[in-house]
Image 1 (cartoon, rainbow, N blue to C red):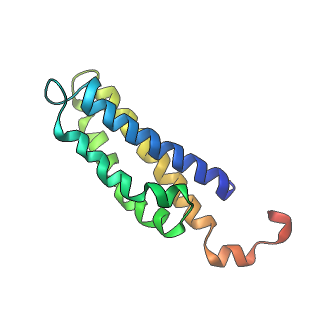
Image 2 (cartoon, one colour; image 1 turned 30 degrees about the horizontal axis):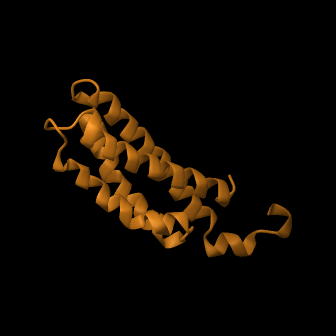
Image 3 (cartoon, one colour; image 1 turned 45 degrees about the vertical axis):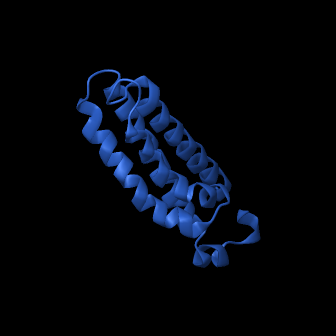
Length: 122
């Protein structure tokens, strides 16, 4: 896949994950009625957001480690009661999509790969 496509996939999945976490903990299935402080879990996702949107390779590299926390939470919370279990599954899926897109983007934009690419490949 081309880096531009991977960047778009990573950006969309990160924005979707932020929206999902806010809706989940604020409205759809909060831990406490009326919302919970768990909405603050989106703050770490905001840190890499602008680097991801701007295509910064270094941000893609380290954010793959950050997203694993959300994958873990999604997998662990699939045992929640409905609709929490479906939301947890969606969180896990979005985390995997972001992880794969970010990892492939970082790999495909490595300076060594860009130097080897011929003008025909672009």
